[in-house]
Amino acid sequence: MKLIVKAKKLNKRRTVPSFLPDPAGITGTVYENFVFEGEEVPEVPNPSLGKWYRDRDNSFYWGGALNVYEEPVDEHAPELLRPDNEVLEKLPITPGHKKKIEQVVNVFETGKKEGDYSQVSVFADYSDPETRTRIRQVTFGRSQTTEFGHLKDLIREYIDNHGKYANDFLPFMSQIGKKPSLESKPEFRELLKKAGREDPVMRFSQDKFFDGKYYQPAFNWFSTNGFTQPLSLLIVYDSYIHSGCMLAFLRKRFPTPTPVNGGDEKEWMGNYVNARHDWLTNHSDKILRNTNYRTNCFKEQMRNNNWDLSRSINAHDIIIT
Image (cartoon, rainbow, N blue to C red):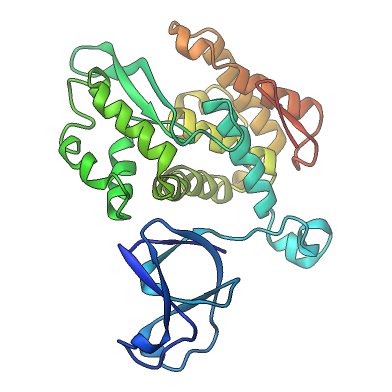
């Protein structure tokens, strides 16, 4: 797995020590935000010291000063390639499916399948309940979270992870999500861009944030309501990213019950996508009208019977394989 140093500095050691401090085993030092590939040491001489990790050069690091930056995913593992084995039957959504789903939505949001961790946009897309007008707001990150939505949660995650620019964000924390919008402060927008472009901790924080705030709630709704097809999860996840949930007023526009209530999965999803497409296409807000490429993409996947997402997907003119 990929690991990232969260402490200001961390000693490299030739062996896992039995006690600390142990200056004799130190071979070097790495510093905050250093990223390396390593594996957990299964047996250590003193478990009370916590976990230890070994890198490819056989150097050892104390786990208390590390965060997992990226879990390994073997998309060619036998259990992910054989569609009829027991493991896959128990795991309808594989890591490969999850990656493809996230890539499609990343393209919808930033134009890049891996997402753009430094992208900052400003749209007049916040409906202010007090004035009943649209307010311009900052939108940021890999899958674009909004200033009056969850941007403050993302920045708090970054600060808690001791990001390189954590202290620079502190003066803005009391202002995020409050009027007037921070879109009028270019120093805030530039700070977001710099952190996303330069600091691996921001990328790590965004991956954790978008997974916890959007993907997991989407997956919970998907599984609780009896859906099983990867394309269905893509549709649900996109709705959570784009609208914050599975929109109740759209669900009321068709009578088909969810699978958990005896309905047909493909019929239900087809009806939801059609209702969402009509809503976006005919919306009074041009910003929303211009996003119906999302539902056009889903309609194309249904026509192609790509429910298992095994085929390539044309996501807004970018091909996801």
